[in-house]
Length: 195
Image (cartoon, rainbow, N blue to C red; front, side, top):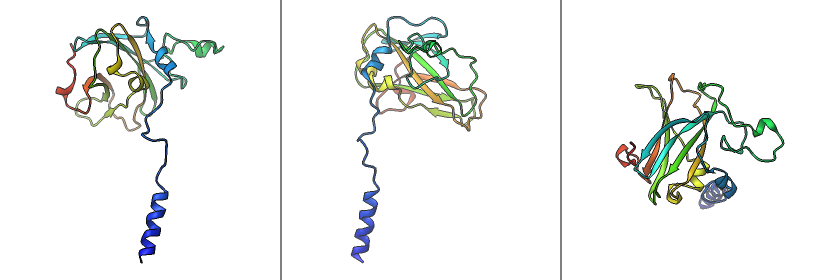
């Protein structure tokens, strides 16, 4: 009887994933450098210029569709690719996104003062009032590799986020909410004040 239990335990342990560790994505430092801009792009950026805690300005965002896995900011083509179509900025054809489709939102942050430790970016989509449509969005590559704790005054950050709109989304709209929240917290009162 003990032999059967021990054999079953060994078989179960053998099935455990022995992956690379914490599961955190590794982000190439070149990617970070390419997404630290000298100026906010002109054109398709929908500007809102919201001050967050007097430390950061959420300049706005640009909506497009992902075209490749390099996630380049709209104003910085991949140099030397030789493909004129790939080197063009992503131009949104419309602001409509169907359920199940992928969309790309590029957030633009302008740092006024260092944010300091203890804060992270949050982003979520909410559907029309009185609907269950909601998506809490995972951190982006920039948020993982160059998060608020290391932001420096004067930086302009292009933060690319590819979002698959849930296939069961029923609302006619999806509103994006974005800001800074204390790490480990979840309430509205835990967010840095936006004005």
